Length: 492
Ligand SMILES: Cc1cc2nc3c(=O)[nH]c(=O)nc-3n(C[C@H](O)[C@H](O)[C@H](O)COP(=O)(O)OP(=O)(O)OC[C@H]3O[C@@H](n4cnc5c(N)ncnc54)[C@H](O)[C@@H]3O)c2cc1C
Image 1 (spheres, helix red, strand yellow):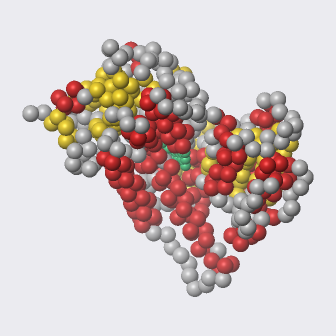
Image 2 (spheres, protein in one colour; image 1 turned 90 degrees about the vertical axis):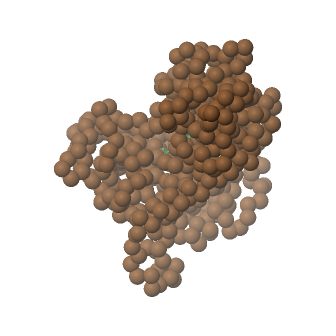
Image 3 (cartoon, protein in one colour; image 1 turned 120 degrees about the vertical axis):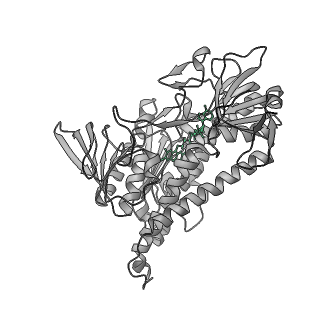
């Protein structure tokens, strides 16, 4: 008799393939990253019968295995390392010269991943979600309202899962430069997270959040870093002032930052890599290093999903959806990194999954609003932002008022010894509505949560001026920045 392993990671739940084929799920999700597993859990919470198809033997996707979680784990190691180096400033002596046990650093990172992957297995069981291991592919439009998803297991065995609704959540993978292949010296986010040693030198191609975080991390651990970015500024989605200041701070840390630079060639040399680019003045430049990281964006995994037989509309490899995350094919939704027009972030994927689940369950939901999505870059110092940049606010017709407050004036920042950066508030001059908040500085990725709530509730400068912020906190710098909009910061 044919048996189908459903929850292999838990090692407990088996289901007959025949039984699986008989079951008609309310929602079947293809892809168990943050978008997919959160959609699955929320759909189950609504009382729907849910199946989750994942090709890997562990849930969590890019985010858990080779993205958000491992990078932030390593960045926390870097933060501790930085504190150790400055321990004497805090009156802590006798540490000597600390050394880095990179193998132990990686082991800690891997144990965090394993713990959370196990946690996801538990949540699947708790919510009675049928976990199906294998590669999912649509077989065509629904027949009598029922979709059939073909699942190919690692063994090659093929089966079918039937569902009233299918949610595509297959995520993304690193884009490569033309004619390049990732390996031991030319790296993507996957290879760089498994390096056996900290490289002596690293060229980072692409200065979005991913490139900037790896640059910051390995600089702290002593690598010589060169950044090569095609656009005129680093972190190009951020407010211009943030890009300018973090460039200055990175240069102060000894990072070689090249913007407006067009990469012509990436070659392996006997000992490492050589990157040739045309700099912002039009001159050819050659940089050599032990390794090069290519962080030039991510391509949606939409290639082998059987979409060609459907009405689904693609936009440069990403799927177009409406406000409920529905594609043009009835009963087929798309969420997370494969969706066109939304930033590729775990929290956007998660929310888009929860929206799709609500729509399928017939429950109320609010669509994702692009101008309410926090963006976080966990560099040293960190960046946290939400809403319109100053330029975007002007371009969308607002008469703009800006308030800026430096962390140099914040007492908690002094206590932490972290004075770099500022909070910038962009407000509408007529009504005082806060349109955007841009933070560069200590704990910026945590502080931004207040600003997200303020924008979500359409808060004004006046309201925030009379909102009590605890003392002494970094959050008081927000209060001062709201005040600065009206020329009334207290501490600067
Ligand atoms: C280095 C790095 C750092 C990052 N840091 C952050 C951060 O700090 N914060 C943040 O918000 N975002 C961060 N991101 C982005 C974040 O990882 C992604 O936005 C997020 O993982 C997208 O979630 P997803 O579920 O759409 O896709 P994924 O996480 O890519 O998951 C998709 C899943 O689908 C599976 N799959 C694919 N095709 C099939 C198929 N046909 N059948 C079955 N299974 C399939 C894959 O195996 C995978 O498990 C980072 C990304 C990188 C690369």
